[in-house]
Length: 607
Image 1 (cartoon, one colour):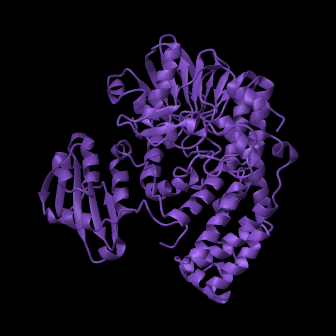
Image 2 (image 1 turned 60 degrees about the horizontal axis):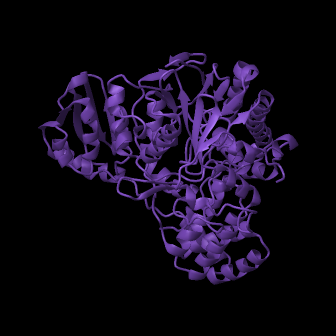
Image 3 (image 1 turned 135 degrees about the horizontal axis):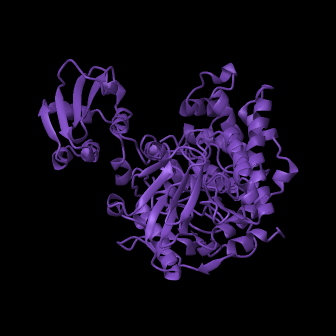
């Protein structure tokens, strides 16, 4: 705790701050309030892990900062950072935050201090929404259509950016509310941060499709005199990701592959399991390619690291962290240990344990090890007893009966709570809540237990999960504070992705005996698709068909969002200018079979 180097780094280069540190939408509602973290002062209270308190103090630092001459970052405006790189006449903007409103506020602060430079390019480093969602706060679609602004992104960006937030977006969004503590009160007994950033903004999520895709390491692009050399890093922190080296400034944008914490290999909101093996290999490549010429490394979260020796050490430790977790998990996996067993016994080497930036504020050693096990071995640990277990409610009912009834379990659990064995109390009392959801004493005891587990968590997202669970046990569900599947994301669905989005909403049992066929014709791009429903499955093909469909929809490609909206509002078909020929009742039958997700589904109770 005596090491104040990170505090010096978060203050270095400060140019100006947003005051007050609040961003509002056009209607006046607050979408970002960094001032709500003003309580992060002095020593940590008993209700917050001292290390997490320290991290939150660092991450809550807000303002416009000079990284090096010509490169500036707005930090503390959202979960992520936005970077402004000055060229000969204008700007290259990197990762324009999550919300349109926060990105606009960050750009306003930059222009207040650095002048009204035009934006010539936007770069998305990867496909997570907090790195592109605010793009319409800094540029417009007209800017791109007119050729005034280029948008660069890694290969595969659009597919991954859109599919992640649409296919499983409802479930991910609900769990993200827990992960970031969006509904929790700010304060020592509530939300203090999420480790990677303080929380997510709640403004408008936007997307403008890239105009250029980067696919090879070493590819160079110069915009307005700004020379950028790209390093591809797919399947690391995101399935589509790239790093950017600026030779003229000896600066590296590490995207999200090297930040001041251990990152997630499987984020608690849900995602594909990331690959720590290739992650470490790409950081080795980073060192080989750029290490000798680096003066600074900055990322789209946290604060920069300056000085060649310091940068090389930082990248080396980050590299070794992911390599060690992967290799040691595999070593123990091959000795027969399961994910939870490995998570209990693995130890980081002293050099990694003693570096602040390797601590598990966002990812954790525990859940990352389990993710590596899952990546290689799947959900089954090989024990036949775990092959066909009862689902949660049925198992809970039997456990509680076996242990002598709900009142007996609660009474016994209180002793374990007094003894500080919070993990066991959570295990057993959770069974009571799932067996008897209205058991008031069990709900309160479980809420108290989650609260204690949250207070002791170094990991910001663990704390938020525990405290969000306690909140919903006491006050009821708070739903999904931020919905990622915005209109802009839906408008960027390809035809195939839109059909997939329909397919995963089909209520299979109700569709068992239904058959239908629909042709979707995109006249302006000469594309035709046949959709078929049979045996409860909606499939599609772009091959030529020998028979006629039940109904045909003819539309320009730009009207695909209208087809998406028609699922909940059939009148949207006509409003979108979609021509319908054939049996229109077929569409009603299809839309009646759609069963959209529930953004308010239960998490800590059975329903």
